Image 1 (spheres, rainbow, N blue to C red):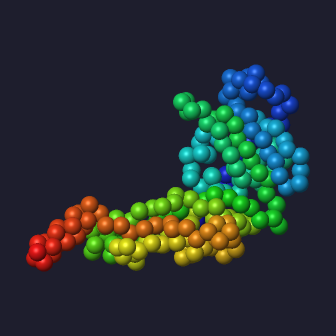
Image 2 (cartoon, rainbow, N blue to C red; image 1 turned 180 degrees about the vertical axis):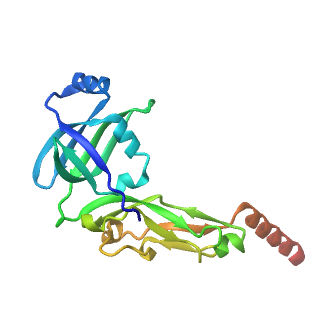
Length: 210
């Protein structure tokens, strides 16, 4: 996990509506809102290019960010982002303030390791199917991980790896498990080569039996 500190520059804005948003975009800015931590929601304007640069880093999406709002500093996480459907343009960003004593619910990415060395791939000629790319977690801001590593290096053909088998950082819970939903994260499946060999062997067995 890296110790990157992302700083987002923001200014309070009072003009609302589509016309105001268009004006902001002409100035190289974009609208956003900061809410939460038992404070009123604040409409803000953000530097569009600064946000585009931040968003190139995967960690930005699952990181406690420093928001410099009118010169004052707040801690927040990115909760929602609206992009233009056809152009590389950001339309709106939602940030949620964080409180050191209140648990956050966030989606964090899964990083799979060991696919190529697993018995399923190396010996069985199969493949590891990734059933999820991210999970929702609950934790205090200080415990927020940038990602969760999924080690599939020991998986054999036919095996599945479930949420309950993930190694979680200290203080982190999976919200799906608290709701009793232990879903598969990865499955080791026969690849085309392995499946073809199995089919050929089965057919040969039938011929011998016949």
